[in-house]
Length: 121
Image (cartoon, rainbow, N blue to C red; front, side, top):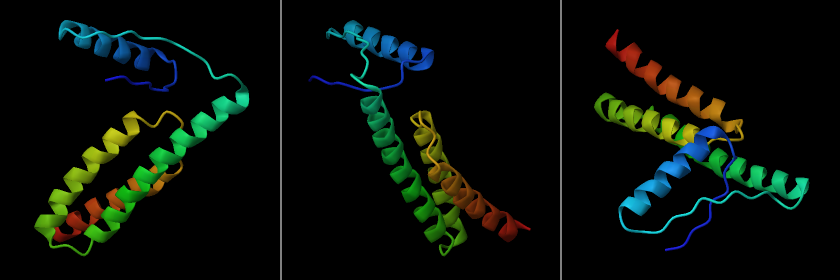
């Protein structure tokens, strides 16, 4: 299997890629980590915009699910809250170009959590 990934060249992503390459090699595969740059500033902005939009779409789905969960019975709502919190953490780990939709998704998940607190009171 071949692959190509575009990520910001920060120390965190570099370390994670090196660990992943080590795991692949230990498993008997081949792995190399290469670093490249977009050919122009416009290409760099386009890549960042696509990554931000993709993550923004994921945040949007979380927000929609959180709002829909408000109509669920409390037990199901609680399970959904846990899943959506995990999903938010997963998305945030890949949110290299902070998407504005993060705030909306966080607020929707917080509102879901607040609805459970009201029921518990």
